[in-house]
Length: 254
Ligand SMILES: O[C@H]1[C@H](O)[C@@H](O)[C@H](O)[C@@H](O)[C@H]1O
Ligand SMILES: [Fe+2]
Ligand SMILES: [Fe+2]
Image (cartoon, rainbow, N blue to C red; front, side, top):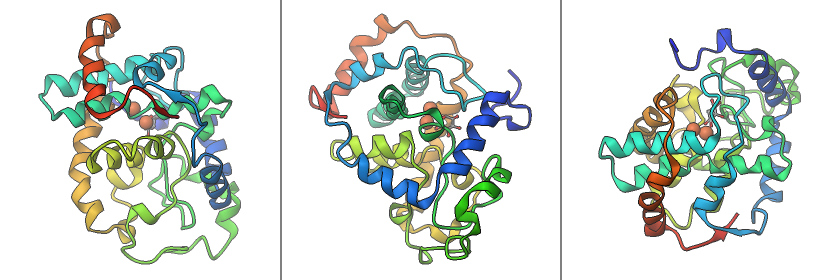
């Protein structure tokens, strides 16, 4: 593998996913979906169990991995663990994509995976496949298509509606159990137009500036672990169940 995130030569399913995602993720869609999932699916599950449930889910938006999500989680976490990252960071790596279990509840991949972006504001050209926003109805609404849109300068990303997907869903599920840094990394890890490309500076507040280094440290494990050897699940199970138990009760509501 030569480079990660090479969307210029991405396979057709990646392009198709982003086309649908960019056309359908409107402010209305996001508000409705947040309301619909505000209490999740009301199902009590253990974190490790959800991780195992993802062992046949392959992310169609990702040009860099054909492995199932259970492996992606373990590869990211193992890389962070080898680097002696704090325990919260290793756990963040392990669970950050668990929100993809939305796919097991009938959500189509365009509504679950891929990079995220703010809605209710002009779409930045720094978002991958930004040309597909021409078919998003919000692009034709002058109120939603200006420099600040529905937001005010420096309002902070916590007050911005992001396109809905695995990040926002999981943030909502885990936010009361984990440290702020960890919740933040989970919520914004797919917002590459900001954390990698520097777009949307006008929305940031001090919390966002304080959290950015954690997000960038995390991103290294999320992205650059994808070409590594597969992890033998049984050999790391005890280590990770102990780590999970340090932060979470046996079951939480998904
Ligand atoms: O294709 C990937 C994948 O869906 C990741 O889970 C997400 O966090 C990334 O932003 C995206 O580029
Ligand atoms: Fe992700
Ligand atoms: Fe990931």
